[in-house]
Length: 393
Image 1 (cartoon, rainbow, N blue to C red):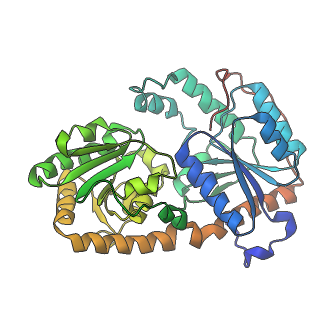
Image 2: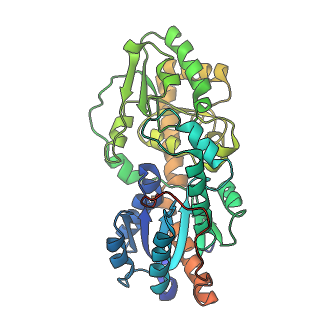
Image 3: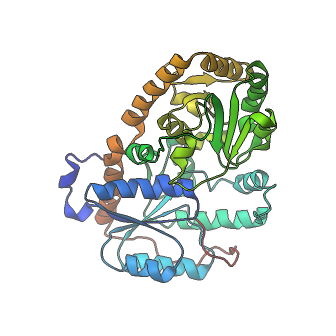
């Protein structure tokens, strides 16, 4: 990644003026659009974001002359006509087009995994065939943009298998000041609590956590348990109902305050190649919300120092031991959380690493300038068509 120092003295030709058009998923939109763009706007950069809903509104923004780059996170166009409209709109304005993703949306096992994860959700009507169409649509766009930005080195390596466009790693960074500003003074559930927060995921991510909760609930009858977001049956069924609190999913403004109810947070994924593409945002959020964290060795182990910034567990026995130690030692909980907060702010916050985003965008603009603009000739969409609906992000 190119470094510019000072960043404020970038040549005008590669000073990013960015519009990010994000999709419907709150988590990716928050980390890949709202937080970085909002923070950069406070630093004086043109870094706007909007939701992908009305083509006429986006057309006016893109054609305004305000921007030199448009970023489309996770987008999959629903028809050949819609892709062509967006392609022509961006190319006619001579903007750099960047695809962004925080997950592996391109590998062949994507459709099967999606069907497996969402099989019990009545509102999820997509079949494997339609997920495969969506995957092909994303691959088609991926091959025709000027650059790609992703969250991890592992995800960058995967993306490189599907496109010749330059791939830049822009890690997920938390807007610490904005997140901590969302706290309320009063918490709704009094200590001591153990909790998990997240969206729908594969059940084996939580097997060790659920098994440990069952044992801990028997050993510590005064401890309460919280499940926030997706009401994971494997967790909800592991503890007595009278000590279980189910907290609904909330919007991004309410989310920090909800997490304040959790004293000991469980951050866990299974040892699955799919999870290697992810980043440790749940650990960042729980830490800034005031929780001491127990985390799985897969994924989170590279972010957490055992007994310094959290506790790392690999199996049910280690999860039980870690949770038990933290239940019995309030001072250790406090020490781990405070140490972890310092590391998160120092290493994973926008406040300290926003320059990396600007530098990557500047490199993309510089590469486009050196190439003399867009080299991607218009082509028809792949033979497989998406369902007749709005584009997804």
